[in-house]
Length: 309
Image 1 (cartoon, rainbow, N blue to C red):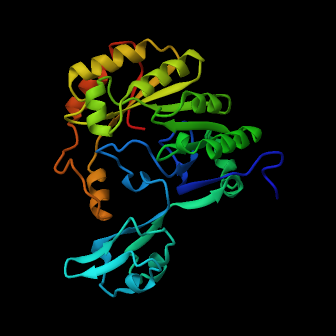
Image 2 (tube, rainbow, N blue to C red; image 1 turned 90 degrees about the horizontal axis):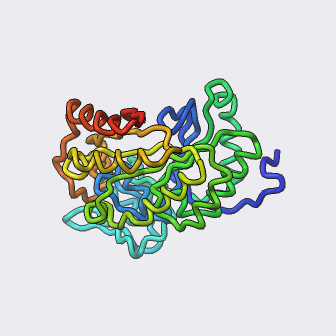
């Protein structure tokens, strides 16, 4: 079977393919997670997705100290000392041989180079669930627009098969790249973190000017948008921040709903699991009262708010 007749088959780097996804758009969906993100959000729940290239990850709690990974690494990137096992990211080429050699699954390769056709074949297996539930395919990440050729080609293929498409994006991308995706995207899941440029830069590593500008331009085309607002204590959880977001989003008529996404401790757990530094150690999830209060502020601007999803 050739599901890509008439379309190109560029390669991209994917780190996960989730079946039966229920929180990435309407209905039952297949979520394709692309690797690489230009942001470095301190609360990131997928920290392994931020690097663009495939990389072995290490779980210290599973390591039995057999040193098979040290022997297997062709670049000598893995070494052992009294302080434990260390991986030199500058030397690592992502071959995954250390993961293959590890008997305790302490190592895992995050990311794989695949073609659009490879992903398309997986999607076709899920089509019956899309049709029964009103679902479809969501491209998420990382940041899908950081792999524009692969992302747009996959979206085009989905539309050629009359599949509903959603694109989960931070909006931090070239306006021309975003425009390329518009004709092939039924729903944009657009992250809006804060209207404060200084806070945005402090907590994500980048300014929000391009993000806000792209969202305004996208909304002007009439594209369907669900704004996704991560609700992070100490970042945007104050009433002033929520009011600024509500005021801005209420001026964009194609924003159909706002998803308020409360921070949860899975972020810290995941950083710890993979031995990654986490600068928000001890940050507690917001209280139910604070979440409801934030939702009420946004609803006060006439917007539909969904908590979670």
